[in-house]
Length: 285
Length: 270
Image 1 (cartoon, each protein chain N blue to C red):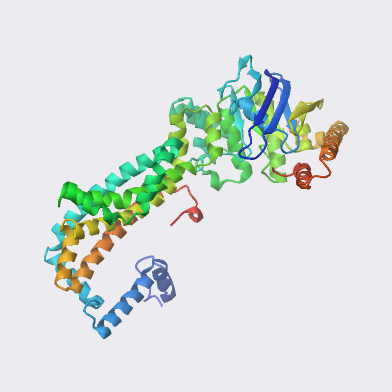
Image 2: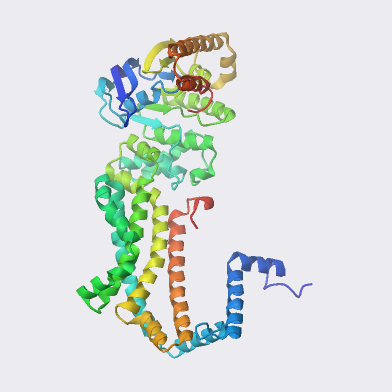
């Protein structure tokens, strides 16, 4: 169980720049074994929220607990998957997957054994000795996923993990992630720009709004599981379509309201940013 | 035409392929250079431009008469000592400056000043401390080569991607683990760029030290020959110095490939 209560964060501006309020008064509870997706335009603070749960940055106000333990820094109960993969380019697949275990002092033979299991789980058996640069982006991110899973965390934090991949690869990885999650059943917080991805994967979708980042709404996704075996049918179901269009309505209303809130006498540069944020839903940041 | 086949199992001999491989290895430029040198030397007949063939002959004399060996041994010892000290201190100080912002801020002005200052100006200082001894030359080699190692190493450490550091931190690494498993391997390629430049500068420091501080080793041979206006010997000894530098750099490249083979070729400095 993850409890986030009253969390605020402001990044202080450098020099003449104004302080940037990233998050204000965020409350959120994520149940055990829940798959929560977080959806929102660029700059809504969703990555900041995830990094705070990971313990990489502290909140200014409020508190975060994971299984009733307050988060004061990174810990063995959480593991993160990064948008940029963040593999060590000089290590082969097996050594990359074993990284977290090595940090914990697991002996070489044992950690390679365990790493090999997770390499298999993500479907990369036979690629253990390859270097990251010899793999496609999709395969690299599967290494990133295996590395996170290998430390057997209770919470998996995924920061737009498929944002940098092309559409086909992204779809295959979504299916694979569903299958793995159905097997391992860890708690997942998954950040995304894509409405379809949010609905396909999540038990609930948290919608965030920017400036300052707050949670706008939480939409339940009552689609039945397992979904990994019939992704196509799920995506064509009436429920899927109605939830995604509901999400789109929310996001569009939010965007219209944000655009209206902009000062018309403004030089237009900020309007440009918000339009970019809207367009950014399909692509990377 | 079975007659023109290289060795057993070799590919058919093609002049084009042979010329191609010579061009690729840089041998082509060397051949042209030697021809130009020889021609100019033979036609101009300047005292200070002996033709290549005469220098080559002198080189053979120097080696066969055993004259070169003690000088070479002395010089190589100076070089080894100076370069080793440069690497040890250079990498240690550079890593420290890369990791600690405070150390970098306090040392940066000195390192940059000493990097740009002509190193030979320190010769009188060393001379006054150690006299004509080996220490003076070794110290000069160090001033020639240590600063470029420091600058490159600290830049290398600072250039390590913050994404990788954040990844490591998310697995709750200790500072020592992050340094050993992330920072150091990521910084190694750029550190080697500095080491390669430092090697060339160390050889320069060695020869300058031996010519202008204490007359020993290869530097003494050059200096003596210069006094006798013997340009042939000067160039013959210089070619040995160049060979030493090239061998040293080749050895460094070998180690570099070994450690940093994971880098794709296009991203390598060489």
